[in-house]
Image 1 (cartoon, rainbow, N blue to C red):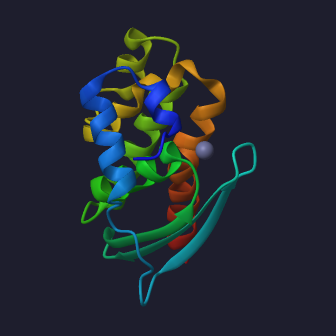
Image 2: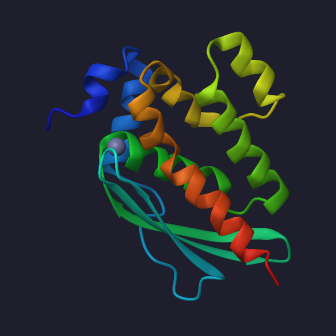
Image 3: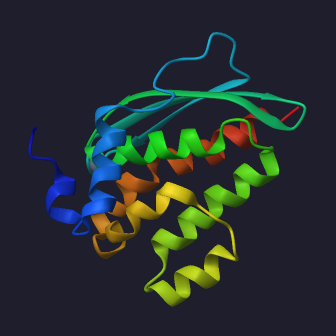
Length: 157
Ligand code: ZN
């Protein structure tokens, strides 16, 4: 197995396993045939790139797919996020994306819990350790920021 950034970054074994699992077998890792919108996101500081497709119908994210290239953190985060939002109402997806973002940008666990306002972010918790590495936060948030742009796009008309 290649030595990835997350090996050094994430100390917790379980969290590291979750991240490596998503990195090696990304979920929803394909383009959609008839997406409502497609949005590209880049993180120049690391060279991560992602293209995200959303199929939004009746206020629900019916399907989601992404393809991209980048570090293990960026790809694992996109995979976890895609899996978490598939089939969820748009309002809930926004809440989840914002809770995840707030959590990564907070200084400690207490603040993170407060920012999340009771929203369960599921496996995305595995990325908590990234919080201590500002450069890698951008990697972890690439999928999330691209998703928020895509939601705006999907709800434009
Ligand atoms: Zn990266």
